Image (cartoon, rainbow, N blue to C red; front, side):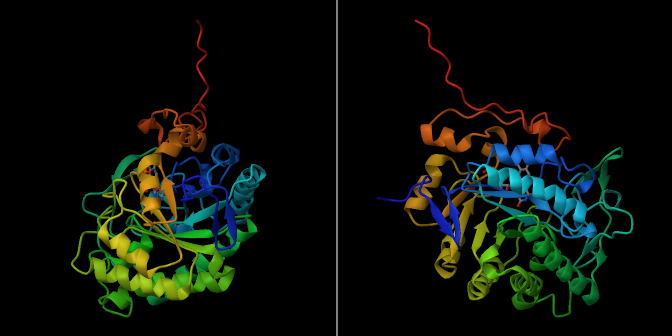
Length: 363
Ligand SMILES: Cc1cc2nc3c(=O)[nH]c(=O)nc-3n(C[C@H](O)[C@H](O)[C@H](O)COP(=O)(O)O)c2cc1C
C-alpha cells in the first residue's frame, strides 16, 4: 500500500509515528531567553506529530536577535529544554531543536550584555525593522563583520549547543540555514561581500555552512543532524542572485557526502508544491527530505505519493490546532490562527487553542 501522512517512518534510527512534522516556529514566550513550563505544555500538546522541530534557538548570546527567543548555551537553558523534551517524550513524541543564530538580523538591545551583532559583512538591512521590548520597532544598524576568529568561535558555539541539545534530551538538531539568518547570510552574495575564503565563489560562500555541519557531526553524530534551507527565499533581505540553483545543487552534493539525517526545504514562495530545484535536490540528496511551506493535508499526500519528499512539515496549522494529526486523520475542520498573538508573551494564543470536540446533535 502507498505511504500516507499516517505511515510510520524511520528517520536515521528514530522511529516516527507518522510523516507529519511540526515546522519550527518562533513564538517569543521564552522570558529571559530560558525555556519554561508553558513552552513544555505547548510542545506536549502537539506531541502526536511524527516529529516536532522547536522554534529557532540560539547557540550563542550573539544570536539572540529577537525579543524573548530561547537559547541553548547556558545550563539554565538546558534545564529549561529538559522540561520540554521530557514532556514530549512522555507523550511518545520525538523532538529536535532548531539552532538559529540570527546574525545580522538582530537588535543590540535584544542581546544580553556583552554580546555583539555579527554578520559575514557589515551590510545594513535597509527595509527590516525589529521589535525591542519596552522600546518598540527600531531600525537595525549594520552588524560587525566577523573576523576569521569570530567565525571559528561561532562554529565552536554551534558545537557546544549541539552537545547541550543532547544533554537536554533532544533527539537531534536542525541547523537553521534558511530565512536569512547567519548561515544563509554567508550563502547569499548580497549579505556576504567577503573577499577571503568565506566569500565570493559558491564553494567559499558555502564554507561556513559546511564547516558548521562537519563540526556538529563530529560532536553528536551525523544521524542526529538535519538542516533547513530556503534556496529561493529572500526573507531578511537575502536577495535573489543568478547562482542560486548552482549553490544549492552544490550543497545537496556536499550534504549527501556528509550523510546527514535530513534536508528540510522551504521558502516563502512555496505554496504546497515542490519547485523544480527542490525536485533536483531530492535526486541528489537521497537521505530524508522534509517538504515545507503552504501544504494542506491533501497537497502533502500528493507530494508524498509523487516521491518528492519523505515527510511534510506544517507551520501555521499547528499553531492553531494542537490536535492537527487527529483533525487530518478524521478530515475535521481546522481552528483559525490568531495572527496578532503569534509573538506575544504568555499563554493566550499559545496553549489555549481548543482540540476538536464533536458538537452534540440533538433531534
Ligand atoms: C509565527 C511563525 C514563526 C516562525 N518561526 C520560524 C523559525 O523560528 N524558524 C524557521 O525555520 N521558520 C520559522 N517560520 C516559518 C515556518 O517554519 C514555516 O516555514 C512557514 O510557516 C510556512 O509553512 P506553513 O505554510 O505550513 O505555515 C515561522 C513561521 C511563523 C508563522
